[in-house]
Length: 490
Ligand SMILES: [Zn+2]
Image (cartoon, rainbow, N blue to C red; front, side, top):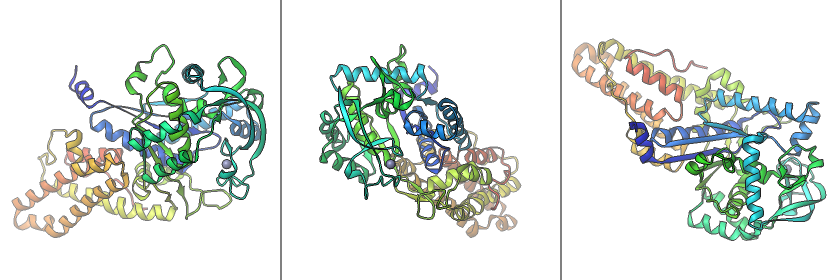
């Protein structure tokens, strides 16, 4: 057993997931936000020494994709493949450290798990046949009830739902709602922030009806996971998509080793529009199958632009790829992690982005690093002022940052890091080591050594947030050399 193995053994495991992205179009800023948040948490947990499994993926079935493919005059498979590539490109562009990428069209990995889970629900007596009659919003890919609508229209899509009557399998959600409410209240399954916890609890209080769990295969042109034992029906999104969290771990396959190691999830990171799916339907399915529920569900808001949802008609769409290309990966990560709250709606315009970039990255962190390392290179030549020993684990990250990260307050953790940036800045102003070196060389050198040590601490704390920048800073400190500019003024 190596030292790293031992550390992982002691620290335990950490399984974090994002929602799988619905690939009926290219990725937008909401997807970027969720990926960067999850990545930062995953990197942080790895630094603590845990064995981390970070899962993301693609949700490829459903009527909306079938229709979008028709509009694009492509086969559903080609259409889906093309969009999956765009999501993978975003993952690469944002320097996301996911360990796995699951696709719901993956018959070998995903279908095996989804069908095994369906079988467990049948065994538990929780699946029955019934007639569904009601409204369906194609935009939401969901059945909607009167109380979900505003002025007869879906509040998310502004469209009237379609009336549908068909024979489906149903899942006995009503049987588990009470037990789930108790788990949320007791904290066995945490839902954060508190506003979302209250939202799901009041949904449960209003009563949870059984839900339609399959759709006729012919209506979806056969695009989906067939219901075990009844090929005329395809699984509806619940068992089709939510099961990715365990199918990716090998649930229901001949090799459940990963599943045994990593389930239950430590964090499901999701957007506020899919709270009910994750905090009610999914845990109900797990309880029915005799499996433990996730430990925590972290719910983020939407990324708006100029206070409005981004849409072509509003002309306020900002493309994550554009900003990555123009300003770099870490600039986009910076904005998403610090300028947007992890739990509330956030706002991005190119102007805001540019202002934050110039103030805090180009003129802030970039400038500070250049100034300190320039003085260090000049006046501490032949020294290793940052020390040689690598610093690891919680010690490297600081107690305060640790507390904020435990609460997943990513933006406040970033605020803390930038406090040390401005403290260092002020210290340069106050002590002026570049002047002091002319009159009291030893005193100036002592101050510089302390500054490099502080800069190193800042770089270490930045590692989960801005990994590339952190690396560049640490490398400059290690070689006692001024780095290439970390950020150019925009
Ligand atoms: Zn809708």
